[in-house]
Image 1 (cartoon, rainbow, N blue to C red):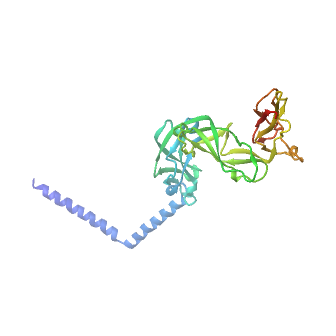
Image 2 (cartoon, rainbow, N blue to C red):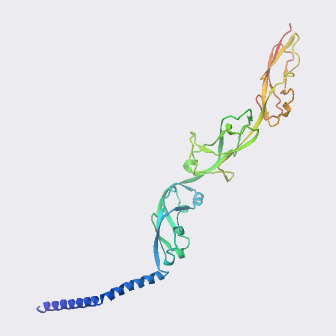
Image 3 (cartoon, rainbow, N blue to C red):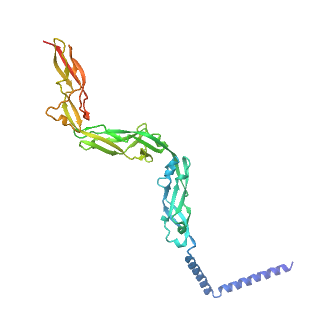
Length: 353
């Protein structure tokens, strides 16, 4: 038992001697030793910088998020209705060979959301992926600051033959006659989010006649369209794909022909035939209207000294003892427009005095 303190004291003395010897070695020529450490660090740094194969990490900020395979998503029967607008930029960290560290720029890396990964409607967490233009030179992406984005997905549906309706306003300038306008196409096919497509009742095109030039001839106008629901409210069509016979259509062509007009009197010389009953006589013939307005691109047949509009029939007064009224069709001679296709003819018959 008495030998234990002696051993402990001997061990402590030995430790003190060892520490003292180490300290003397460290402090002996300490300036040279410090210089050696500095030189070693410098040499190590030079060797590291000269080794082009050593990997290094580099960070890039404010990279825009791209969207891929939107067409594939529609082919799969879905469409993203929200979550892709105003995507915030992300930051990435990459690992690349030291040789290309200084030449690596943010343009070498692409962050995107792949829509082809979506398999159902509803709220979806879509992972982001990053690609490198040259992975051998510019390494790989280690991390993305925002690894996923949240999007809302709806079924992508299709409807055909949505009717196009013209909302005609204004009047033509001057005395020109405007033939009824024609829409081309008169129906449209629509594809888009189910919540929008199912509400569409018709397509409306606003057409202002006062905007037409005061000049005879055929006018073709390209006009935008809007889609309306059953209550007449305009629907958001920004996500709709509109086609006609398989061709994407952004406008509707409205075609209209303007004609020169002319006022022509109705010929009253041959509106009746036959003779009234014995002892009766025709006292007068009235026609309403007395003149009609016609319109055509060629009115030369009516530009003589006494232009008149003839009828296709006459009033038969054979054996009549009282006035007779009849409706007679006018001979339009093939003009594009006639204000009154028929006239009312009244033959006044009275006893002879």
